Length: 258
Image (cartoon, rainbow, N blue to C red):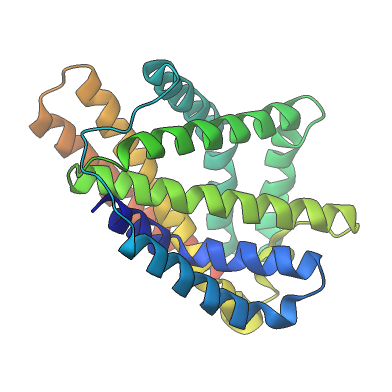
């Protein structure tokens, strides 16, 4: 059963996995074979996971201090949300007005998170959050858990692959001297008119970030002995507000102007 859950988690991360594999094959100059390689790999992984024996133990055994890893993951996530992710995503909403306004705000925000001292710290936090998240996911994949746990793991796995692909795209563009602005990300008139293949990749990433952060908040409240009903209520409010924000960002990415 645990192997089937892993397969489902990977299916949830299809969009960033597809983009990341395309980037990697492009790096080696064999992107023309991507579609065939993608299909064969997915079928092979799926078949391997479905026929292998899993276990339904409460948690997988770990060789590290799990509570410490969880704290590190939470602290790095909070610092990234306030130091970069919140600013970066909020910036996208301004594109609903115009690319010009978005660029003005981007330059303002980037003067902070792309500064010589802050950017290396943010990259270190990204790596820390990713590694600690993988360790946490590995621990919980042996447990059936509830719907909240499954959503947290699947959104986390999605984000690990998304961050790898997104950071790789940005750093590659910078190395080629390309400005990583709004036009670079979405095209002149939005993803629909420029690169439709990126629509699920971008839009789901916003949803997954909000979902994962909201679930993390719920978990933190429960760890503080908060009443489960109250913790769930906070989660539902958070995800509802996040859904409105996600719709606004999605509209901007697709080229809508108001």
